[in-house]
Image (cartoon, rainbow, N blue to C red):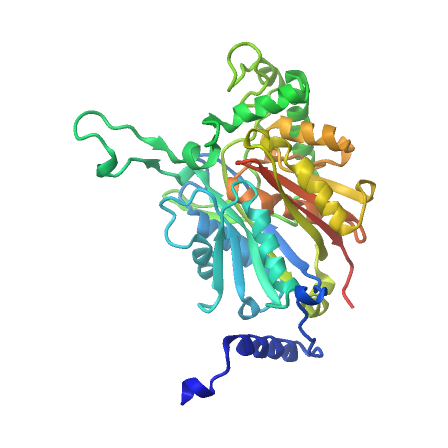
Length: 435
């Protein structure tokens, strides 16, 4: 009889949501769904990230989910939202081999969220962290939840080497190991080439020279150095305590942005095209890194209750994904961004800050060229070349950095390409408060 009398799952969900609203002391709102043509607003209440550590550097002993947990704890603390109000966690994570079951679930529980919190891991290669935020926002927009956590995490230093199972090996002779970073993160499976060779193709098609790319890389380092010196990252980065035999070490700053040697940068040989026509080097490309970011998203009722003191309170205006030929993945943002802008109902000249992921200098240069963007407004605080590119984290990292730059009323765009020939973009607007 208990089963007959119990409420269906959807009714239970509605009841839980109404209970949250009563607890917040706001009038219950009628749920509205996309089928009615009415979608609710989703807001970003807080955002936080760890520093980005060098490959085989300070975070070598910390798993990606535990880095994610640090970011989640920090973001929740900034929001002042009780953890028990969080219904779902979405975390991007690309290189999952040996990380353990359900990395996002690990991050949620390591962050001391209740065991009843659902969690989903997202893999859209470099765009994973930003796509995770979109999934979380959609739950709020459709009235399925009032509070969500989303972000990204990666520890590239801990990715194992792969050895095929016995049935796939020869029965006699030497065996070969495969680098998991290359296999699952940096190789175009359609053309059987490194992503860097795809980027060389983009440089050739868009007539972007080695000198232009080197100049851009130098600018990325110089902007990052100026940003750290001015305290521009102080509000977004949360410290990570690393335990070692020498004692505890607190990691607070990104670890690669000081590594600029202009003479050496300009003298480096091409890394991917060695016939003499190559333009892409290790220095005008992003590096291998470890790090995590997290954002707390809420409904209008949540934003009204907790957003008034938020440093980054913003409305998610729109988002878009777009796909092109896999070899052309670096310019996929130039397809996704116009879609996101059209959905937002704004023009390019209304955007105050653009955060584009710098997988390679040519990615930023090509998209700036195609879209005719103002370079001064693109990655003003430096980008992945200087700050690092921890794959599953990067989409959430650029969004976190974007939010901390925007002034009230300003629009910002975060966009990131991903392997396989695609990109994800998001338009946000900073707001002072929510009525």
